[in-house]
Length: 250
Image 1 (cartoon, rainbow, N blue to C red):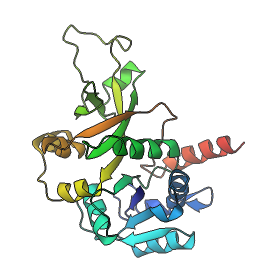
Image 2: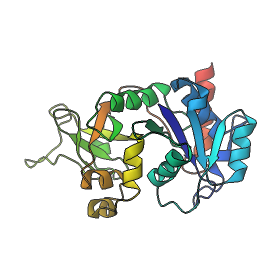
Image 3: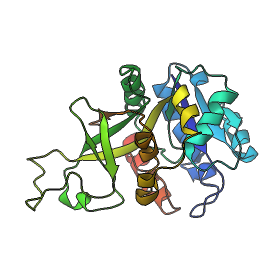
Image 4: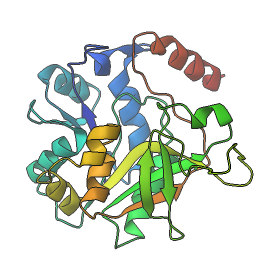
């Protein structure tokens, strides 16, 4: 299993985000160190970046970085290039860990990797946990997922799914699931997705994973019951992450 961490310097909301300092260390280092805990070897963790400044920082703390093109439209395209640059076999599993998740649980990384390895018919695996707050169901920023009895995804949506035709929401009667945005891919799936046209559902919902479902690629959804991860979207999120890290260190 390989763990890939895409890290772009350009960001409209937070330029240079991977290099932002969190308790004295760049954010990309925090993510890398958590990925290393999940990996069999530090050599299995690779930062995929389009910026030499990020690559230099990664090399400085002992990590491995690969320079990829700057014109990719999404993360899976970048990982497809990475798979080719690394010469990965089609069956190799690549876990995609976002470069702005400095609090990611290493157990979650291992979970999705093992889930894909254990389900040969799937091209992708991801994770979900149970929604316990009714307000979250109507929040379009929280993606919901519905699976079949085998744990494979039926659909992902920003809307409340499934819809209760009789009205009302009963979180105890039906276990609504929140999608957690981490993926494991087979290298062959990454190469296939790079050739697939965008799906109509993907364009409407703005959810990249719907492209895979549209083109018939099965996605296995592993159940996760660990601590939630807090991503860094804007500079103001840094203080929250630092507070959590400081509290956990006590």
